[in-house]
Image 1: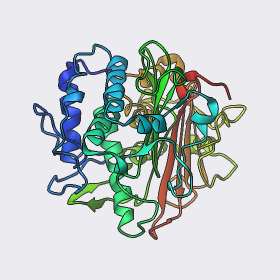
Image 2: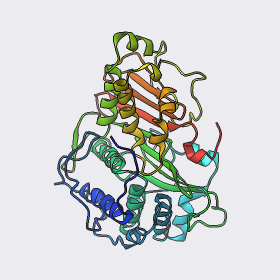
Image 3: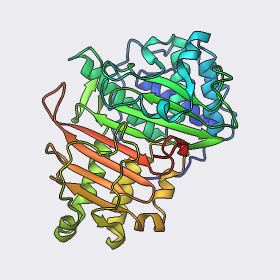
Length: 389
């Protein structure tokens, strides 16, 4: 799995992002994109025969293509944010731009449905076709192609759940908002030279993409899914957490019986430890098995598990920072209760100098089968490093 920035021109990457979303029925394709119909282990659709009736595929996407000349990912994200804001009324702009404060950053995202926990901003379902197309392009620009696949599958899962329980679930029941260091002076533009954050949050998927000149982080990034098995929505098959589950399981299965015993935690965990509104709730000391004691092949499995999360980000450099020799040798892996990552109560974590990843198996909520919760955090760059916890 690769994690370096793409060397393709930004204009081509933007078109490709829009085309990926178009195939999933989420956005308009601006043309020139490559074939993205093949399935991937991280959960892409295995067919593209279905489309969401709420898709904005017929909308004008010229505002998105105007940003393709930007030379950095941060500049492109800022341009796309402003293009999106330009599609909104003044009252809508005021409803999506908030001050960059700790309270605004930490208190309005959750793994619970939006009917139970208030989100800031405006839901995709409430946008005009033009605004929704601009929003989809903005969201995609914060993500790598792997990340776009994750996001598309996560939203499809909520669309699937809405077929069984309509209240609180839906493919477009995801909210977009901004935290701006200059919000007191303007709600119509994001600053090019001051920190700001794009927040995208719904039921089982949240990211906060932080920009300070360039894009520097995508965390906190909560990813959960129900159903955990492959499902079909609008004619397309998805399994968005497959690569996360499989790489973490391979990491544990790659250990010897002695190593597996050393990595086991004595405490049981019924959910992730550093979840929503648990910022900074890390253990005082690292626990489990030191990665420095592993063979090169075992370390490669740890890196692959980290990549299944951190490589969702577009251009932040976080994966590279987590996997330097120094960082990987300062990382610990641990598990609790069950190491099969299938039984309710199964739990695994990766705890490094910068990276924190947790994966927990939960009982079903809408469906009878178990489902997954997980989180990726960055100990220095959550919320762009703007707050201390």
